[in-house]
Image 1 (cartoon, one colour):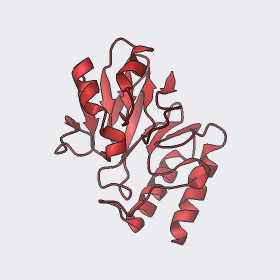
Image 2 (image 1 turned 90 degrees about the vertical axis):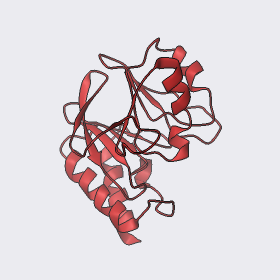
Image 3 (image 1 turned 120 degrees about the horizontal axis):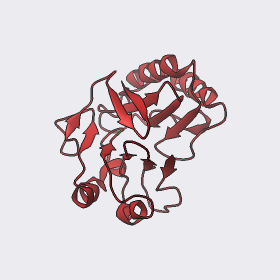
Length: 192
């Protein structure tokens, strides 16, 4: 099961997805809300914490999660203080009951990853793409528009045959025709 623990948070934060199953994990930790209180409503333990990237709105709650659950974090840049274990492009990681392929997708951030389970068609896209064809900013440190376009193309090529759900870093998840949103983001990003 996938739950967005930050769904109704009014403060500035990323979405925080709790994925339960054989491997109970978080995708991103968020910021500016009591993550531990929300976690305790659903689980007693946490196996892993995956980071799509290390912008502050996605990682400020990492310390609290590490301390409360003695959990290690996984992300692209093993040199980051927020990342205990590096994940390479194409590496497979367990999330819930499925195996997800890590896709290195820089452009919004130099350390950005998406996670995609081909068997179920579920993708955690971080801040690469959003509902309704939005895409990540490139005016922050590590941002680069041409690289972002290449990353959206990479995501599109990877998911085009089976995307069923797109869980994004901000705003609503897309569960109806999510590939349309990725294609709109690709076209829109290419225009700038």
